[in-house]
Length: 254
Image (cartoon, rainbow, N blue to C red; front, side):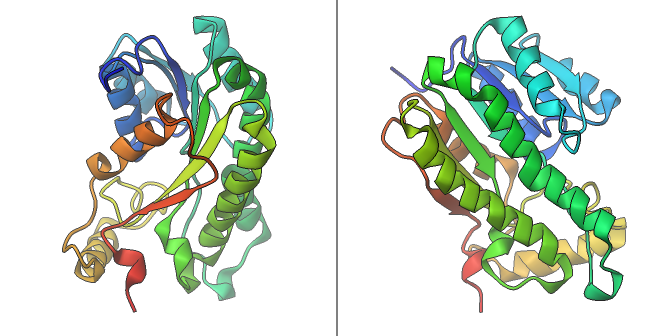
């Protein structure tokens, strides 16, 4: 089986699929023959991505809503009758220094980065077991070092990495593989989008991060997406419970 037909008529869910890594993942999946349901909070952005392929369906959903997991799985399986891949890409984070610690902000990050993937995996387990499918969680390479200004974002992503390993064991008997990607600094729009930074500050951070990457540049979504598809592929039958860091060496900085 060649890479070009591995995904033919397979069905994937990509949360946070209206921009950045999620959007790029959805577009590559449909380019290789898959059907993809993307989720997000912004209806206009979702609709824009949907115009790029007839194989993309959208569901406006807030991952912080505990009911969203079941709604997402039902939307995909009722449309296409199967489920082969869940990409838990949706994330919440923002600069959050200790002086500004706020219970609601921390709770929202936990809801989106920990609770939402958990409930989506629970909802999708039966369908994934039928297809011997896969789950790919999106973490962050930032969690591998101390990151005081985004400590809770990193902490919740560390929790997702821990869940990845536990789910890999718990779901192995169902034939479901669970792995994670920990991207480094990627040109995905997350600084001004998810993090809510002003353009000027985001540009400064991008320049700083690029200077820290041993391979000399910030990443592109095209550096990340092939690994998501590889970990999610039915050709990948004997790899589970792994966290793959793709960051140009950034997390090795001292």
